[in-house]
Image (cartoon, rainbow, N blue to C red; front, top):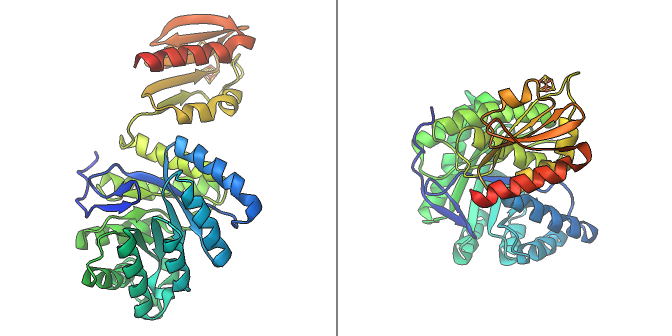
Length: 355
Ligand code: SF4
């Protein structure tokens, strides 16, 4: 059972509210260099990810060329943009001036405290947010050998938080990540018991698709069930779209996502006369974009399909050479294979218009 959400400070990153007064949001991170040639793909990807529910996109900013790139990206106003800064505090200042709504820093690698103060002061002047991110693998020297690791992570981040609080900075988000789901959970639980700042949660360096989704689901579901976590990322060595879809799916499964499609689909077997796998290749993203709250069943055959998915608001299944579109276990239409997707889309649109 989901516990009541942990009450946090409320933070703004541009149009995105972060904290217990707002829904848990999904974010992701661009994985490539921001060359001139890459920008059109960045734009179309951001629009597509926004349409399926991503609320913030983070970009690494390792040099001045990237500052100029995030200036352009932020000006598109597709969704709030965060600049990820390591080592050079001037890149954080320039990114903030360039219009990003959030910077992510690890004060441990920014260097002298006055540099972090400069970043805080600039962000405060511009109304931008700062995420202080600490990862278990990159703790500063004085914390590196302390055990247990999650306590060292929290002690370290609380030291940073203290500086932000002294300067009365209002827009702080914290993250404590490890590649080990259990350490991630323990660090976030401990921080949540000691500080009111919102938490961005995720398992770092989680691996390719399947290990990343399994580890992230393990950690994020546990924390979210305890009411901990205000933004989430499923970090995957792979497709960026999968990060957003899997994060959304975790929230949907926990009842923390408002609207959207719940999918029931069969894995197929020798009885299948409808290609459920091919259906998702063609219609998967359309379903992800839908805002109306419906349960969609995609079944290979009518032998089990109709019966097992009878609670679905709309379903599609094979029946010999024909395709059946059904709703709540009742056949709505029977069409040829060639007309299947068109008929399904029409019925789905009708349903969403009604609901
Ligand atoms: S619904 Fe039909 S095709 Fe799909 S797994 Fe079950 S029996 Fe096989």
